[in-house]
Image (cartoon, rainbow, N blue to C red):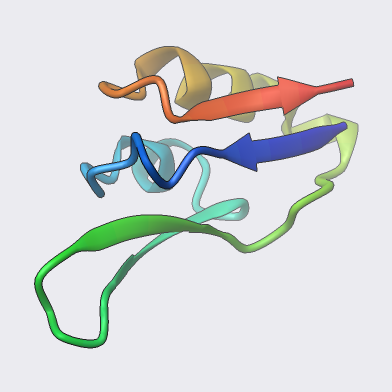
Length: 68
């Protein structure tokens, strides 16, 4: 299973990190003006699928997707 993020849509709300911190981390840009999601694990184990699906479902900007 692969996880994709669309950084053009991401606004750093952090719902994904709250739901699946093993996979997602919200980071601040170097100038401190923009937060965005970063993948901790790009191809997580199937055991995390339920958490990832929930993160995708609750992303306010629909910036996350699952492949495979």
